[in-house]
Image (cartoon, rainbow, N blue to C red; front, side):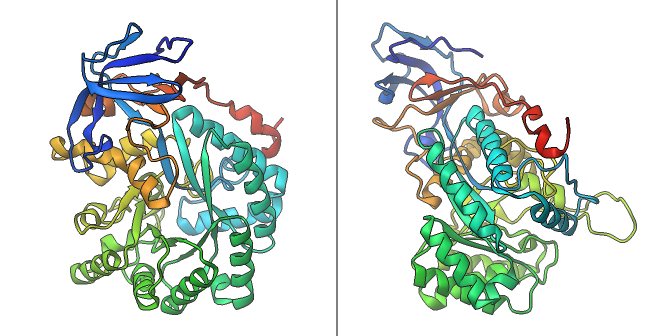
Length: 437
């Protein structure tokens, strides 16, 4: 769907369907028919449909308009290595070992930089305005990747707002010297302290040390927690307890939290209540979790028995801030994906069952926009308000089912009120990095 945008950038998107949840009514699932006036690269007015006076009107006839997206959890440093390093069996452990081998063999600065830039061009074309990425920090990679990220963040200023979390495994967190080295480099880069743990006997110690280091360095926290089907995983509960016990005041995000869905009801409820008390936000990665989880078995290929995702609806009902995000793209942790946040919303509705009741479905428009923007503290708020930059995505669909039934490949992406080129980069650009001619 190609919209003809006036060259002076002063026009009205007339008869637009905008989710009330991004118009200052976060609990509403309604679509509001409005006229959105755009001038000077910003939203100049939002009025009842049919009421905006302007000679340059683009009549959308009820088509849906949403703010540019926010992708809270990605892995830009891993992206697009699948052609040279596949996951041998589709499992989480298979992914971990494949990435470790590829990182040791190939992650020089130029390799990481080119793949990062390719991923960002994909995200930008799909309509994303803000991204948080996790970056592998196993020394000496922390020194290489932070420099690449800092240069990339500067180069993409004005197009995609970037944040990064330094990702450490339990062994690094338990090593005081390594933990401090990563934390200091993270602080210097203006980053977030990250990590990963699931089934580990020292989870209380791991989380306490990481939270204390974040407090000492005045860093926010974003962790991979309990990315496993094993109900004995305890990182999420240990994290919440550590935040409460230390009085940590920074922002805290927990990603994945898959094991929560397999735990006994009383333990799951206790964990959810503790997470809510601690003020921790939870981000679910529905596509990647569906791909990786429940593959582990001893008898060859079988059909999975569960979807791999956390109790996101229950967390939200308990007052926990929640979001959904892309996670990996074309690497051993997820063979697919393109950093398309609308795809995440579309598939999330199917996987996480937040599509019913239909009357409330559009409250979840915030899950790839305003909610992760608030969780992360992005300048891009992903809400339609007067005075905000006119960073919008226009879809050819007037209802929830029309919107969700197609990939919306013909969407129009507006940045500063002007339509951008949504042509996606060609995979052939990366062939030389993959050992292909």
